[in-house]
Image 1 (cartoon, rainbow, N blue to C red):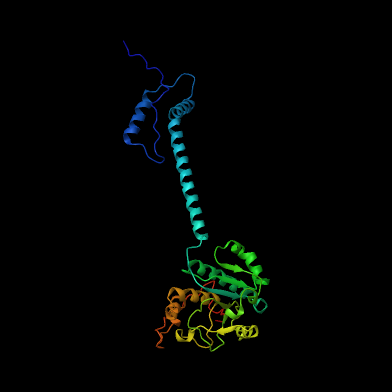
Image 2 (cartoon, rainbow, N blue to C red):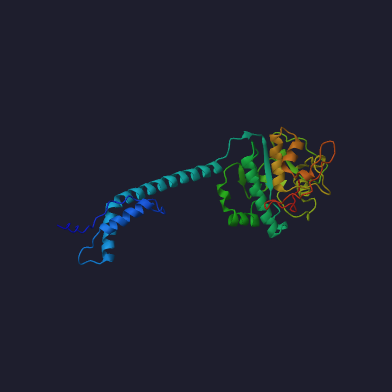
Amino acid sequence: MSDPTPEPTTNTPPVVPKPRGQKPTPEEIEERRKLKKLQVLPEGISRKEWKRQQKRERWEESKEKYQEINREKKRLARQRKRIRLQEDEELRLAKRKPTKKIETDVKVIIDCDFDELMLDKEIVSLSNQLKHCYSIMRRATFNLPVTVTSFNKRLKDRFEESLSDYHLWVGNMEFTDKSLTEVGDINQMVYLTADTEEEITKLEPNHTYIIGGIVDKNRHKHLCYKKAKELGIKVARLPIGKYIEVNGRHVLVTSHVYELLCKLYETGGDWEQAFNKVLPPRKIRHKDDTPTVESESKEPESEEEPESDKEEA
């Protein structure tokens, strides 16, 4: 008696999802061949339709597993997103939150009452230097609050157009359209200018030091000196000649002057250390007037502080 014909088989063993891109093993390939030989097409159905039906059945058997995998992927993605957003928020707050600083009894004014004397590109340079002053203040160990006076005209327009977030700056940096004589006692002010023989040796308590906020490539000689004399404000210069190898007038950019005042506190009043920390090494010389060996490579110029744009100090 001959063996009965095997009944048509439409079901196959449940398929466990494999990682995407993983090739079947030789054993799996051989198993599939054996199953294919045992399978008999049902009557009235094409092989293509039968394969499609088999595929649907396999999906029904394994879809719960796939759905579970997808749910886990989405859960992990949401978790990573929450962590990333939390880290971004913490970073944002850390940037905005000022660090604890050591208080001082010295204030700084940046006098920007020279708008009409500057070209448009010089206004841009000055705005970048003010922004850099804010960055310096944020990083400084000691608190030297800054008031930007005569903040109006093109300089203010520049901030409103390109640096509009200055309204959100956190820290002791104030912008006002008032003149410098309206924000403090001129008897306690010292205007820093290179055009005087009077040299400061330290920052006096309860004094306000004024930095001229102008970028003019030295077109306007003695500008800050004349203004200070007209207003009856004391003038003084930084002890630059003792530490810096320069030719001509001893002038620095606005942000360098402010950074020097901050570093002077951090170095315990040591001008040489302060200058070494702030200014290019190729310009520094020791107190014994022995010039240091100049570097052959040029100091790269900062976008915010072009070396050709000088302020009086």
